[in-house]
Structure formats: C-alpha cells, structure tokens
Image 1 (cartoon, rainbow, N blue to C red):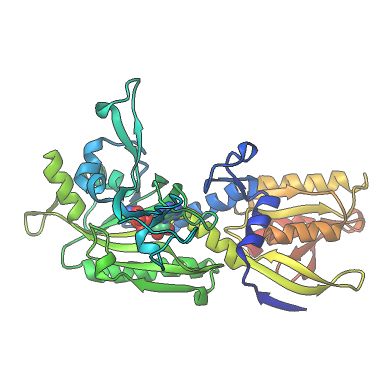
Image 2 (image 1 turned 120 degrees about the horizontal axis):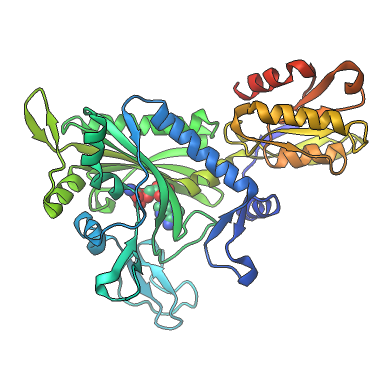
Length: 446
Ligand code: GAP
C-alpha cells in the first residue's frame, strides 16, 4: 500500500463536495447564482468545526480575549469614518469590445482576455454592497452590508472596556458574514461576494505593536499546523508598502498552496490607532484606555489577525484529500480516496456500521449508536449506516473523513465486543462494548 498527500485538482474537489454534501451551488435549480455557495449537511459540520476550533483556541484558550457578535447592518457614518465608503475601492477596467470587466491590478496583459479587445482606463469601483432600510429607497435610507466584521469591534470598544474592565493588552474576537461586491470572483469558494470572517482586534500599547504583530503571525500559523495542515503548503507573504490597505502600517498574509497556486487565507495587519481615532473624531465619543500607572488616556494600537472561514475550509479540504493505492478484499488493486481531516474538524466523528442488515444485528448496533451518540464523543455527529456492503461503507466514510468506524458483527452477539477501524491506517482492533466510549474518546482526542 502506498500513501501520498495528493495534490487534488479543483474539479475533483468541487465534485466530491457536491456528491457527498459538503458544498452546493446556490440556487442551483434556477441555474445557480454565480460564485455563491451553500454548505450542505457535512459542509455545515466542517465549517462549524473550523469556527468552533478557532474560537476555542483564540478566545477560550487565552486569558486576554473576549468575544463579540455585532450586527451586519451598521450606521452609515461607521463606513464614512472608517474610510470604506470613500476608499474601499478596486480599479475596474472594461473591454471596449465585449464589455467584460476585470480588476486592473490582477491583469497580466493590457488586452481583454475574453476577446483580445482594447481595455478602458481604470476607474475606482467601490466594493461595498448597498441596501436600503425601510419602505422608501432614497439617500436617507441607504446603508451597507458590512465588508468586514472589524468595525463592529471598534465601535464597541468603549462598551466592552466598561463591561469587562480589561487592561491592555487584550483582544476582542468575532466571527461573522461579510459582503463585498467583488469585480471578479471564482476558484470555487475562494473569492465570493458573501463570505465569513474569523477575526480579532488585539489592543496593545503603542510601541509594543511590532512585537505583538510578530507574535500573532506565529500563533496564527501554529493554529493551522496544529490542526494538521501541511507546513510545506503554507507560506508567509509580507505586503509591499504600495499594496497596504488604507488603515495598515504593515500586513503579513498566511498563504495556502491551493490547487491553482498560492492564495491568501489570512491577513495579520497592524492597523495602528487608525480606526479608534477615526471613530472618536467622527462620533465625538472617546475611544481610549485610561492607564492607571501613568494616569493618561491612550489610544491603543491594534493587531488584527483576520482569516476567511470559507478559504480556511477550502484549504483544509484540499489539504486532507488523499488518494492511496490499496488492495481490495477481492485481491484487486484500487484507489482509496480519503480526507485525512483532523478529528476536531471531521464532520462525522464515528460511524456505527452493522456488518449487514440482518435483523439479529440491528438491535445491538442501534443500542451502541445511541450510547455513543449520547456520550457526546467530541461533540459531533455519530452516524448509523447499514446500506450496501461493509467495504463500500468504509470507503464512503473514508471519503468524508470519518476518523473511526465501529463494526458490529455476529461475534459481537456472543463476545460483547466490536471492531474499531482507523481511517488512516485501516487497522482494525477488537474492543469490549463496555469500553467502547472511553476508547473512542481516547482515540479522537489523541
Ligand atoms: N478586517 C480585515 C479584513 O477584512 P481582508 O484581508 O480584506 O481583511 C480578511 O479579509 C480575510 O477574508 C482574507 O484573508 C480572506 O481569507 C477573506 N476574504 C476576503 N475577501 C474574500 C472574498 N471575496 N471571498 C472569500 N473570502 C474573502
């Protein structure tokens, strides 16, 4: 048997995601809405596991962090003060022949890649998605769907400080939907107009910002590798001063080697005191921290690790995809497809499989399913599957990344034991039913 960490092509991954219920095209029965995706029964589990694992590490696992869940809709003055209304722009060019639109900064050639036609001069295109609140659609009811979750944190800085009495340095974390009217979309869930961000604003004393920036880059990188992402498919990219966002003094991206090449998965920016000062000035509310030692009000600097949930899910899927040459029960050589997902991320934690649908096996298998399910092994799905041959069911569970299968066979009726099968090694061990839950917990929690 040979195992390889396979470089999957995007088409194979998209097809697996649809077939096995990870990700579907949005509004598919109406022809689909371009670059918009729905997470299916296994996709929602994987995505929730990514978000929960991040929250556990970034909020519960530290003593200098609190959480927040701010509204998507915010006062329009937020976006004026933050600079997004005026400066959250991409340079748009249009083909004079076929009217195709492109981002000028992403073009290799100065001609249309669709028809070879001449391109217009670039013009600034604002990425904020607009909507109107209330029954009248005019300038007074205009508002935006947030393009980042960060501003909800900045405008609540004073509230959180008063409510929690935190001292510097401390952070506020948030996970939520964001919207951008991207000129170009594509590469599956990589660039979409609706997406989710896991981000945190970490408030530090001015002068300590560079050091904290470095620490956060390291901590963020460790989060991916601790969850099994291949270190050789991760790299850091420091932003050139010319490409820095309007609020940033420095930014380092964590890039993943996606099936089509390197792409940004997370940005870690030093936002300085730009946002707190901008909102203080625009709102008239002081957004400062009172330093008991120096008896001074200071405006903290902010380090902002900001990761795309959808890009992280896509990277974990691509990274876990493995093809392995193996020999079937009938002695034939075959390719086994498996997702080597970390148990914390796997959508299904354990599958309970009676050897066959024989009525003698079902009561015991169902009893075991109930016992494992109610034990809450790792707080995830426990699936009961009795359709088709046992070999096929193993393959099905491998393909969706289920770390452990439990097989109930005819011997189980006499010896009160079952077989645990490991996804990665395919090793099978006999375990007493009385010890099963403890053994599963031990294996899943490493
Ligand atoms: N608050 C900072 C901020 O929003 P960003 O680099 O613009 O920073 C953060 O976005 C992360 O969101 C990116 O690193 C990327 O993973 C993800 N992201 C950005 N635009 C996206 C899009 N159109 N589709 C999917 N994910 C996107």
